[in-house]
Amino acid sequence: MAKGHWLDPLARSLLEATGQIRREPRQRGAELPEPSKAGDESVERDLLALKLAQNPGLRLRSAEEVRHAAALGWRLDVNRATAADWLRLPGCIPSQVDLLLRLQSRGVQLSGPEDLQELLDLDEAVIRRWQPLLVFRWYGDAPTARPAPLDLNRCTAEQLRAQLPLEEARLRHLLQERSRLPFRDLADLQDRLGLPADLVEALIGRVSFGQGPSGPELPRPPRPASSR
Image (cartoon, rainbow, N blue to C red; front, side, top):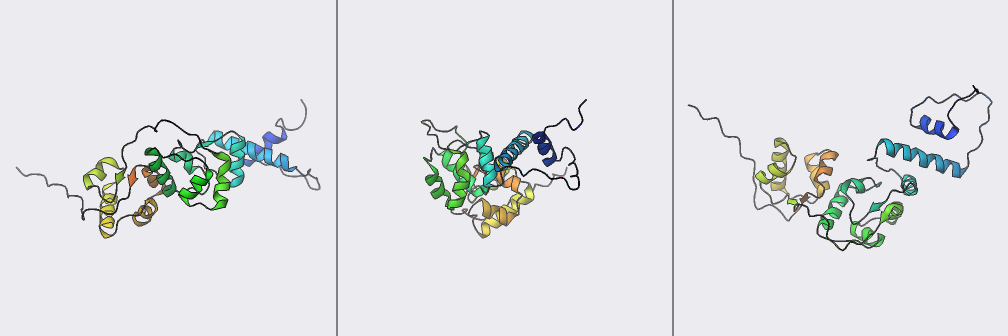
């Protein structure tokens, strides 16, 4: 059997980078060849492919990862993208996704990067970072109908309890806060209620924020058990 490791250098570098095998110590005085830029790009792209295979919901962290994901064939269909699709983009926040999904549910379609940049008030650097993944397809039919978003500033406690995944303590807190001041958007809701990110993401596209409630309302206390 030939001496040396059975893995080729690319496979070894991928497994070492993901922590699946131990890095071999470099021998003292040994000179490693200077990797080419193209080689570095190839290794980084293959490493991202491995990460995506292990975690299909992986969120991209940088413009470089966006470029590598595009080279691997991943695309985001702007006029049909889900919340999970949008949240994979670096710097995309829940309040932006919420707006996009609510407009999508009403049949609004975007025709190019300029539309998206203007709608979300994005910096030029952000839209350039996302652009390799964005596809603007035009659809003649409306997207699959979704239930109308629940207006958190106007709905009743019973509607909140029936339609949203909120425990009673958070429900009461929400009603107390909105009686003090209507919520502006998802970011405001998260800040004032201290909601975890996964719960905020679950509300994307499911809630809206009107001008304010008709009046303060608190959940009714449970009825005492009747005595016999």
